[in-house]
Length: 312
Image (tube, rainbow, N blue to C red; front, side, top):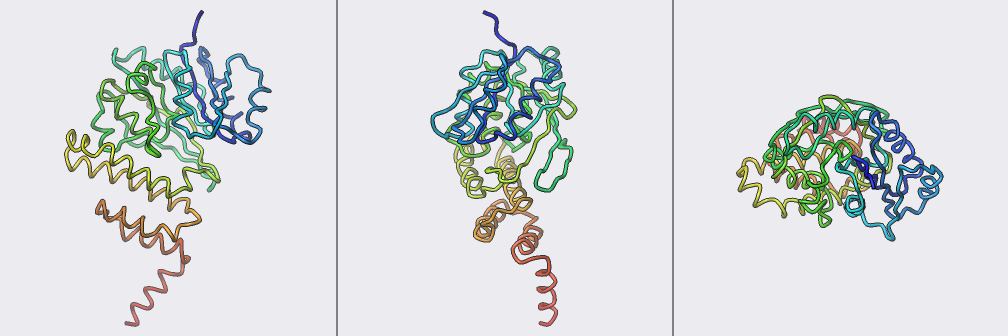
């Protein structure tokens, strides 16, 4: 029996109106030696019928009995994958046509211990109807310490990873709530090199109603679990300064996302937000304080405060 070189894993939950776009972006790849494992995390909408109606031999559909979260869904797919390389695609994201071929070229030209390849992405904010290029810093080679200091590409949809590397670290950590991709990269990078494609290879979408974007409590609690797991080892490897850098990256990612897409319970969470900012001794506290006032009370609040202060 012959197996595909790449197995693509799509975890999904109630995305019947979005998942076809994701699947089509895989089927349009210039590299075609792959299969697709769709792990339905107990959807209650029409996702199953949408997938089965495609009737495509490249697609294998699995449905979990209960909603278990993306870590369990991804791990379920990895354990059933037969490809040498594993690629992930969130069911609301989209690949560009040359993604797999460019990443496989990195493996072809890279060192024997190359275990993971990522790239840049476009970000499409469906809430604000705005597209932007996410580039920023990228690193290749032995970048274990970079990950320990909080470097983390924006989504697992960017990565093409050797299955042996995922097996060696025992897959995604199902005990964590958030920052699960950073946790995975830290563990893989201990034994494997990383590389990247120097151009955008996916489109990452932020959707209205996205659970991760809007659930501040989930991100806040996940931050605590991640710290508890990694604090001692990070300090041991990159010192107290490196650990502060890690926490700063994580806190800013939580607070920035929350300000960019304010949750309904924003006012209730303000004390937790400032607790995070004070913990990292943020030099942006004044900026975030003003932003929170505007979000809660409207744009006129800053003018009102300044006017009252002048009277005094």
